Length: 335
Image (tube, rainbow, N blue to C red; front, side, top):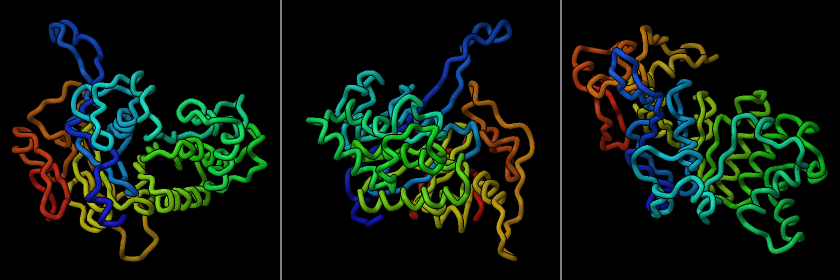
């Protein structure tokens, strides 16, 4: 991404964002204390035009919930959300859907088969967001825009008359991307978009996304548990654990010199075919902290962390950004 893009107003900026889910009372022993699952806690992030950011972590870390809140498919519990400098936090999901800003952030879902209405042709699947959010002047304009975006994602025009069950997995993925791109968004949020695809198809879809980023200037937030895939596409990586950002930095920083114990453990699990380059496997043994009413004074990795000390259960670490731009949440990071 050009350095000039980093000086522009971020497409989306979140500040101290939280998303909690109320589970109910805690029973007799806790005297009715409300139980809250902290899916996202105190997350701040800015994404600039043309940037590709990877959001990674194990299942249950909060990355998918964060992406849904960013797209305003769910309301935040606390924090602020700004789009191109405009605060949209206080807009309800219903109000945001009616806002002109709705078209500027689009989501591509994990399973293309589940996200496509089987009763719609490919043409209508792609045209539907246009009808709802962009209101083309006439049928000719609608047809022209659908065909243009189909060409942009390398989807043959004869497929526009087909139904989802007549498409391959790769073609369905292209339809999902075309649906998101047809309204010319600023940001695509991609929730595990390649996880259900064969490796060869994954590579083709990743190349397509990178080309769209470069040519159309759209920014990407790529949500995934597959760090190898993120490495191919993203220039910056954000690592989440139990609702919190534990480390973020450039792709080179994260892969070449990971400093947080959780990041190091994730990377050590990636297999490599190159002799002498396999990392020593770091295992996170022990019971994870509960995301339900977590203690504010205990590090959330405590109990699994190979570097933990008594201090980690007395004072929870804060996320601190260094001079090199890397952010870390750890009392005892690797050098």
